[in-house]
Image (cartoon, rainbow, N blue to C red):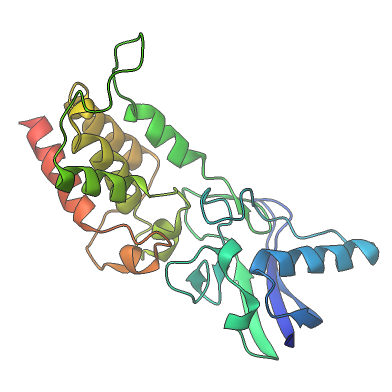
Amino acid sequence: MKRIKLNVNVWRQSSNEDVGKFVKYTLSDLNSHMSFLEMLDVLNEKLIEEGNNPISFEHDCREGICGSCSMMINGEPHGPQKATTACQLHLFNFRDGDEVYVEPWRAKPFPIIKDLVVDRSSFDRIIQSGGYVSVNTGSAPDGNAIPIPQKDAKLAFDAAACIGCGACVASCKNASASLFVSAKIAQLAILPQGNPERKSRVINMINQMEEEGFGHCTNTGNCEAQCPKEISISNIEKMNQEYIKANL
């Protein structure tokens, strides 16, 4: 089993008001099959043993599902491996002796709380502004009661794969949240169950996105390239179409 050494430069910042900086830590004899977060666990154990403050970072499922493990690794959201979250990134993707730089998302609507942790509640407020559907209460309806074309079902499912991690915002030069918002709008707009609030949903969500201070999309496509779930920018086209129709 291969063991490697890494020089890990981590952004340390005690609060949003503090001036942060990179702090370098050297870790030897790391198992190359560790995930990136497991490597941070090892580093934190070392820091605690030495009487130092551990590094604050977010995590939950560690299975690439929840989107919590939001961090820039060597200047790329979630690291160098395409379509991979930080928790699923393994150390065999790095070389022995590599310099690794780890920092939080850089976007005004994502203020830093501490170290690698940022406040992403702006995403929650966008969802709350319009992310719901009206359904009749009662017993569960038959699964085939509403026929849905296979193409539409696939498009809606692909859009719903968005985990809301914020990589699209962190990778965009304008800090645009258009990919995230468009995915949440498209997954409901494509399906008949989303029709009752279709117009109000897109207007409210886009207005909330702008109120939160996210930048405008200029179609550079970096959001799609860096998205760990490979959400298509075609959803942004769908969002724009829905917004125009809702305002007519």
